[in-house]
Length: 193
Image (tube, rainbow, N blue to C red):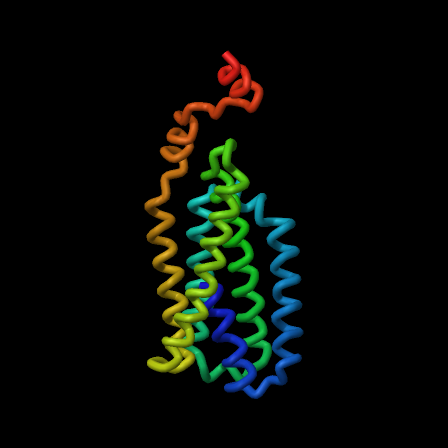
């Protein structure tokens, strides 16, 4: 979602709506700053209050909704408050979804290898961003920009289906069943005997 959106929205605003590139950069920067503040202040609380799966499903539904609105209403794109509001709302929903994904990623980690495991999750996330940008490039050859927003909504819907399959309780039980990795001192004692 992020890679496709981040590749699409500058093209829409600068090439289609004739915004100055610094105007888009300022709006994207402010949107990211506001979204980051909301994510820091409310993200964890919302995830704890709603639960991982429910929170992520809500944020993905909202992301799909903002994308559907943009796809359905290209006649309003030239209305700067509309487009700016959509960019801001998208960034907020995306940041809250990312906060939730990070929380889920941490919950899925086995403590003995948590740093490496979480790093892999982040790497896969970055690969997804790159894949999304590639998808936008390919989609732009087949679809108009308003239709690509429906592709983004479809990716969010696919994410919701994946979330429905996620079972953190079962995964946590599997993690707890792993044998503990011996501490370094324990290894030295066994190898010396």
